[in-house]
Amino acid sequence: VNAAATPLVVLLAAPFAPRLARRFGALRVMAGGVLITALAIAAMTAAVDATLWFVLRLIIGLGSAAPWAISETLVNALSHDRNRAQWVAAYGGCFLIGMVFGPIALETVGPDGPGGFYVAVAVIGLAAIALASLRGVALPAEDAPATGAARAVLLAPTLIAAGFASGYLESAAVSFFSLRLVAAGRTEAIALYALAVLLVGGLIAQYPTTSTARRIGAGGAAAGIGGAAAGHSHTRTH
Image (tube, rainbow, N blue to C red; front, side, top):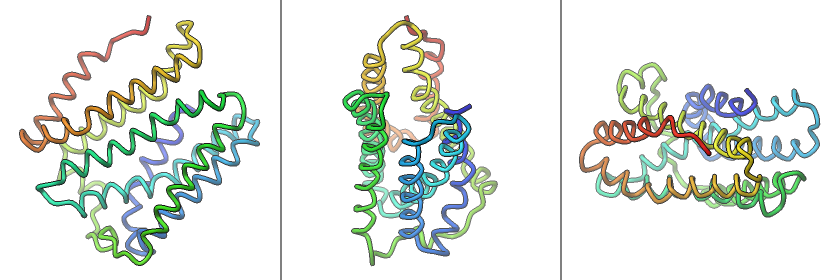
């Protein structure tokens, strides 16, 4: 339940991010989300109660929703049909680089102390600097037409289904992969590095996947990837 807290709030809050961007400006909304996330992570260094930890994870999800949803909108709005695959691959690659960095940094500073939280806050600070560099830039997300979540599902059911499956697999891998390794008798260091290797595989697959989707269509690519994932869904860690 604790592991699901953050993605659950992201799921619930993300549909409201575009409306907030149109009302207050995309940059302000993303900066606010970054600040909320940084403060919640910093507060975790002093959290000793499981209930408080759960609440802080909910707050992290709330802060993460806007930067995540708006940045993906911007990638699609700022790219063109001829280079969208490259832009999406670069965006996904940067996302996975951050996820690969996480387990390695945690193993470097140690998983038991507050060092991992400080590293996370520092990385979020880099994101804040990047957002500050966009001051004065007109962002397309602020002018995007309003589309409700229900209408989005009706307009692109295959895309929504693929996104749901992708989120499920990603969350399951990140949340339980290392836990399964530790339960099987591996050390925490091995579990963290194994998780990093898993994420590197996703990083390598970014450009081939987006290029294939452009050539054969998103539906065909999603069906192929889904079939491959289903074929490995019962793999066990020994």
